[in-house]
Structures are given as structure tokens and as C-alpha cells.
Image 1 (cartoon, one colour):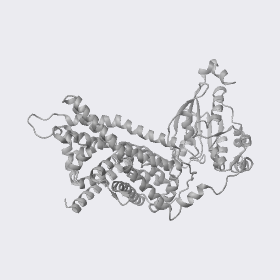
Image 2: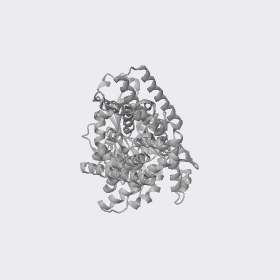
Image 3: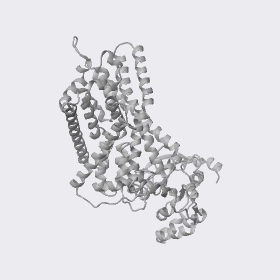
Image 4: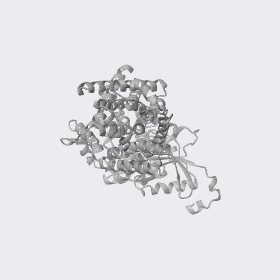
Length: 630
């Protein structure tokens, strides 16, 4: 039946929604293929462990049929060893699921068919209709490897197609088969009888098939190995990693300076324009002091966030991050954590929520718990606006030799979080009981030149998430904070700013007794409360509170010079220390509860993180006061 016949079939509406499961080894290109089929923008990276839970989407074939597409976590066998592998096994074996699997598309890395073939045979033996999508065939050919596709298809008893998931026209053959199957139904799995009922050894069969179908092997010594000889060198490897990270934090301040000035000037001009256009009263105060002051004080840091993610995406795309995990493995072994924890912890630099979820790839239960508990200490991107505000206000923008002083301070804050995580992990290891060190076993992907399309998509997604937070959570918080800061109105004849008589002012002065020993004033105390929703909201809260606290000429001054004139340097350093440790994020606490399935573990994380934050701020404030003689 051709496409035209299928489109004209009267019973087309009665065709059930078929589901397709994408299965394969980690880092085989499943998520890239999922994005290509469904039009989604799921995270794609050149290392294993990115997909830690099933992702679902829909695609419409050329014949008008809708297919449900499921991207499952990567597996190496059908015997699960980790939480994410259990997700895949359940999806493939549970025939009572709401959306049972009708068709499996096994995505295999054509450059390493040897690693995939045994699992392919085991998946075929399950009996599901199956298609083998040989991905990255362009790279295999470049390396000189030739695979006899027709013979491979005969041996397996299932369709075999070449795909290049990163290219828009790289999945044409697969789409043709899916269109055909959507019209005519999925055929029986011919290979299931061969590899299921006969009980042949999949290991022996995979070796026999490989000997037959691979006509020419790739060169053994490649450019990948030459690069690895340098970046994984026992002497030069770690300094190279430190230099890369150091350069990244220098660029966050140096490169962002000009676009931040543009945004700051635009926000200032907008506030002044609205102040002149609106009559004096509640509406002008809400718009200028509440919305513009709150949102404007946080959106100015978007360039720094995008620059940081630009470097992270470059490292992901190139394939360097797994090498960094191997180099960190030896260091992490000193706290009896394997390099398996490195990728989740590295993900936490973007956001602790996906970082904690990525711990599902860790096999040892105790290692997983410890990694979850120390992940919030990694400096996530939500801390960057807070750090940037305080550093910009109190640290001079000058160079020391070749380095930017503000970048050095930012780098020091990131290192402080890492050092604290190491110390906490060391203590937890002894509290929970030691276990044998498990060396890191991880596939090293091939190096790739970063694809600008993937980087652009990644930056757009990060900017979109940030702007959505600004336009929803931060906007709502700014408006609510303005209301609580404006009412009740002060009695007639009173002196001072109106905010001191408001709900916020009264609450702030009450909490001030608790935070005064660590150098915080009542404005900071107020900002920390809405900052629990998301760390960066603390900046917008400060913007709103200080806009309503200011008077006279101070109203036209931006937040950074305003706090620099109201805070001492010890107070600023104390607040930086607070944000290194404090769990100022409800989402992080919620995912700790979900991933550990324990309220006790969540409350333990809250208590120990707030305890560390208070002690660190207390020490920082009083030591700074002593050294500065304040």
C-alpha cells in the first residue's frame, strides 16, 4: 500500500496510537533522534548519563498517523544495575503499562557496533517489532569502517537503516519505514524466534555476526587517542582542566561587562520614562519600585549566565567532560566516591535538580545518597546573579597581572563550594560506614567539533527558562513583596521611610535579631525569605526593598552602588559565604525528598546546609571585621 492509498483509507481514524521506544547504549544518539522525530529540544550532550528518566513526545507521519515516541535511559544490558536502567527494563517488559511499547527502535553507535550487538540480540529476543538504527554512520565511514548492512539485516531478521540524527536530512530511511508501518501495521519480529527460542548464546552470536558484517575495521590509532594522550596525561591533565575552568570564570565577568551595561542602561531609562509618564501614587510605585526595580535587578545578569552555559555546552559537545570525570576519579577516591559522582555533581553547576536526578546512574546506594546530599553545594547558575551583584558592588574591577580580580573572586567561590562538598562527603562516609572504593568504568565518547546548532539551542533554552522565571515567579514575588512592603501605610506625622511600618519592615526587624550576629541587616533578612523559592529572587527582593527604602536622589541609583553605600565589606563577604552553603531553593529540597523517598533525608539536608551557612557566615563576618578593624 503506498502513501496515497493510506491517506485515503476510510478507517484511518480508527488506527490506534502506536508507541515507539528508543533503546540503546548510553551516548548512542537516542535523545538527538528523539528531538529530530518529535521536534523537542531535550538536552543532548556528548557523554553518557544525560537521559535519566523516560521522555515522551509525539510525531505525525507523512500519512497523518500520530506516533507516541518514548526516549528511554541508556542501558548496557537487560539486567538493571542502576535506577535509570530499571526505568528502561520496566518499559520494555511491562505489557500492562498505560502506553505499552509497540515498536522498538534500537539506536546503535555505528562506530562501535561491537559494544552494541549483544544487547541488540537480547532486545530482539523480547519479541517486540524492532528496527535497528545505525547512528553516526558518517563518522564510521570517515574512520574507514565498512559495515555490510544487507548482511546485517539478514543476520538479525529486522530492518536496519543508517541515521545521522544531528542532521535534518539524516533520518529519511527511518521515516520511510515508520510511515509504512503506521499505514500497514508493524510486522512480526522475525529475529525473535532465532534468538529467543533457540537459546543461542548472544555473546557467541554477536562475535560471529561481527566477523561476517564488518568488512573493514577503523584505524586503531586515531586523533581521539592523540588528544587523550595530552588531556588525560597524569601530569598535564589536571592543570589543563584547572586552566579551562579558570578561563571560563574570567570570561563570565570580562565578556559580560558591555552587554550588562546595555541592559542596565535600558532598564534605567525605562524606569525613568515610566516615572515621568505615570502620576505620583500607588500605580507608579508598583510599576517603578516594585516591577522595574525587582525584575530589572535580576535580568541584568542574563549575559553572565549565558556565557557560563556557553562554555559548559562547548565542553559537553566536544566530549571533554567524561575525560574530566576520569581525571577527578582519583581525587574523589580519597573521599571514597568514584568518578561516577562527577557527572551528577558537574550537572549541579547548572542546576542541582537535574544533577540530583542524574545520581540514578550511580550503582552503590551509599555513594548515591552522599552525592545527593552534597550536590546542593555545587554553585548552580541561580547563585550567579547574587555573586555578581555583591562582587560587582564591593570588588574593584581591575586586573592582577593577566587576571580579572572579580573573576578570581568568583572562581574562589566555586572552589569553596567544591571544597565544602569534599569535606561533607568525607564526614558522611564515616558516619554512614565505609565501603570499598569502586573504580570508574565509563565509555569515553569520540571528540566532536561543537555543533553551533546544538549550542544555540542550549543557550536559547537556558535564556527561555531564565526569562520564564523572570516573567512568572520573580514577577509575582516582586509584586507580592511590593504589596507587603507598602501596607499598612504609616500613621500621619511619622518620620522615616514607609516600608519600616509595613508588614515586610516589621518582619525584617524581627528576623534581624537572628541574623545580626552574622552581619545581616533587616533588608537582607527580608530578601532571604522569598529567595527560598529560587536563589536569584533574593536579588530582585533586594531591588524592591531598597527601592522602597530609598529616598531623594537614591531613587535613581542602581542596586549595586546602593548596597555598597549601605553595607560594610564584612557584611558582603558574609552574605557570599551564606549563599555558598544555604539551601535557598525549594525545588532542590523537593527533588531530594523524591529521589531518596525520605522526609528524614530532606530535613537532614536542610538542617546541615543551614547550619553550615550560619557558621560560615558567622566566621567570615567576624574574621573580616577583625582583619579590617571594623
